Image: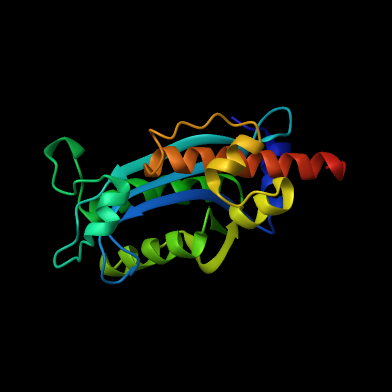
Length: 207
């Protein structure tokens, strides 16, 4: 467990927000109409050496909500069969019921005020998270409703690459194309990328 110094560092580093890396896989681009099919969230913290690092991943396959639209081109791109029995998919309320509580707990333990979504194209991810939370009538959505951190922009600045796969390789992260477009895999690689950029910045600024 992090000590009081690392906890204080996390609470102060991002203006009281806890960065949580999120990736979603969907059946389209319209958050209100198209199905959420996968969600993954990676909680971050500072280790004993004062480096930001991934701590825990929470991920679920999600059943299309009743009446959800499924765009064939999106399903072809991700390779997801929404109704495959081996997906062991959960309803949106069940999936968010597994992902949101540990995030709320981490926010509290880090003495932060709220989680802030970190993503590679975070407006897309946040839009689907917020839409699912609204459908499930969840009042305690742990994420800031509109603010986010964009690793595409950060990677463009730090490594001159904005595509996740290329940015990861530029940052020295191994990339397996066969596992890409899985919410869990993409979220974990995005988390590594974000931590590398933050840690390099902190080193340069003596933090």
